[in-house]
Amino acid sequence: MADWLKKFDVHVKALDGVRKRTLPGAILTLASSTLIVLLCFSELLVFSSVKTVHHMTVDSAAADRPSVRISLHATFPHLACDSTNLEVEATRGDPTMDVVNSIVKTPVGEGGCSLKGELLVGKVGGNFHISTGMAGLPSSPMLQLSSGLMSATGLMGSFKGVNMSHTIHHLSFGPKFPGRSNPLEEVTNVVSTDVGQYQFHIKVIPTVYKYLRRSPVYSNQYSLSEQFVKLDLMSALKASSAPGIFFYYDFYPVMVEYDEEKVSILQFLTRICGIIGGIFTVSGLIDGFLHQSYQQLKKAA
Image (tube, rainbow, N blue to C red):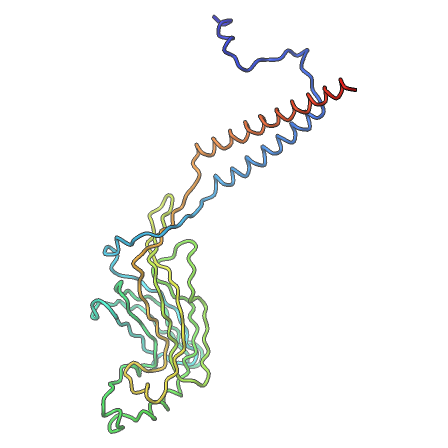
């Protein structure tokens, strides 16, 4: 029975007496073994690492997340906390939406103020601004004719005494996730003699980051453009015209999805076997070719 089964052996064994070890074969074996070790080590690094891929998708579950948490930290070195006013407005949807404001004002330096905390707002386009508290004055004929409150000239004069130089230490929409970058991070704007508003127009992109072994994180990332709008005598009559920094934000209807991926153990073992088998097969072919060539040259000589 054993002799019959031996007929199916494709790994024919050579006798010790007819096997021959050569120096080129030894060098080729050492080179092949070194290459196998290097490639297997690189595959081990790939197996132990996590790759992140991303793609765009429709934000179909936006209704399940009707609010967004905005984290803000800004410092005004020349504006007292008593003169600092933060307001949130919705440009679309319900203008009377509930806004949770947990921004804390902390005096810094000599007459400065630091604002740090969070805003919980509805997931609709809107804006929030930090100003001197003069925004919101009624634009009425009484004001325009200087017959009650103050003249536009006097208002501009009071504006010129306001220094809105600021540093935005942090601004984000939603919780942190790996690889997120915030354009408004440690950004400083110094106001010269001009009176005006810093306006940041922000496009918020809903984002979900899916971990391998943890619950996904639903957050946002954003891009922005900014401009400085000077205030003149006529613009001072408008209700919304006061020195300050204004953040206008809007949401994209699409979502960016990040997925963590990792090579499975079966893929890893398959690649290792392929490396070992492939290199030894190729090295065997090269060794056979070199040996046959050497024998032919030896006979010809």
